Length: 428
Image 1 (spheres, rainbow, N blue to C red):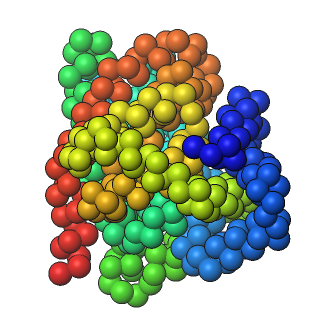
Image 2: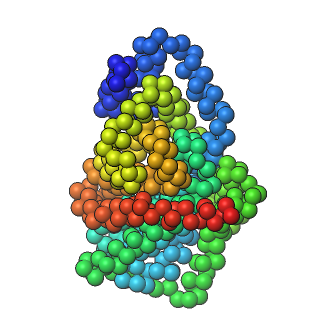
């Protein structure tokens, strides 16, 4: 490791410890590196602008963010919850099952764990509190179910990973379908298992006529992922254009069907989307300049030598990567892990001949588990704040659920066909 690259990581670590936003924690050390190595700072700007303005995929991010904000602004989340409740609420632990199933549906519209927890999660937590569920369990299952969002298509982290790796966004979206369903299924099996031990209550049992009404009302929202995937794989739109289609479709159904969107609300959504996009854009810019520096310093080569000194087996490599990223997820922000560490290990992924789509889905699920992993899992803080319960109670309940999620993670890691089945079928 050269002195310059050592200083880059040292300053980055200091910035993280000082809780400086990730975008500036990447850019400030990079600027120092350019000064230290005597490089022209004009090159710094050229790398960022050249990379961002030539990457068509990045445009999909603000469009899906906008669609998620529209979905969270009115009746869409409520209709999804009512439909799921009518389907599963009558079983023991029914509302906890609804919590997971509704998140699976909602993830097909937003692709964001935070959007799920902060939008649909409010309805889920309120209903579970009414039914006298334990607050810790309520927050834990809500946090865990929200992690499905970035796995099942569409997915904002997949868009960022595609930008970093060059993997097809469309293939990543398809690759996330089976793992997303598996994760939801595993969480529902866990709920069913503990429902008797915890004496979870039976949820609401709607009459057939009322359930039919809720189903009809939910159909326009339920069609969102169908339209997106059909448009992409029918060859009518690119993933980026699918983001525009999703944004337009959510506006139409929110105004004409759910009547939850007016000019004032739309303006607030636009401002919120612009703010979120600006933060994301700065993070991506920081990651691009960081990737340029570590490639210039041949740092991934040094990492590759260390890993290859340990093993030349790709499955042991995947095991090591999973273990390292699980540990990182317990202490670091998911964006930091994705933007800093993925560019370092991508050359090794290619060296071992690991499919980039398979690796993208695996590492994305790994990173999302970090959102629910103590001590710094963001979803734990969000759900605990919504429920107004102590974080320690949520942490106590999330630990066995994390084990369930890790089992799914290792299952898709070592059975790549689960990830690649649908992308391969679509390619034939």
